[in-house]
Length: 127
Image (cartoon, rainbow, N blue to C red; front, top):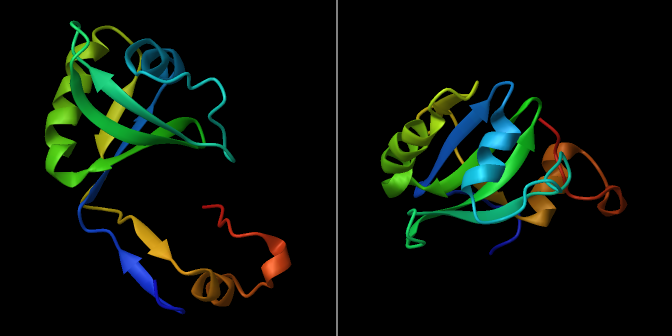
């Protein structure tokens, strides 16, 4: 990665899951424990078939009262549909935000310039 660059990851998609039951909903269907996922800690997880076969993998990030799922864009529609199948009567809303947001990687130098900060302040932007 070159200094002072921002890379848009066009092959990534984004779902947002919110609602009264969103944490329990995810906890019951993904492969990783999301109890430690908060505003500062994310986790890598996957969705499997009932027989235990791999379907999709993604990163789970906490945001306000819900969770972002960052996954490969080529799988986003299938993952969206699969999650909606599991939703049943859970009080959750699943949104596909892939056309509204982008996933980007920012070099440390560029990040510090954007945030107008120094290197001692850390490298996280709260949104």
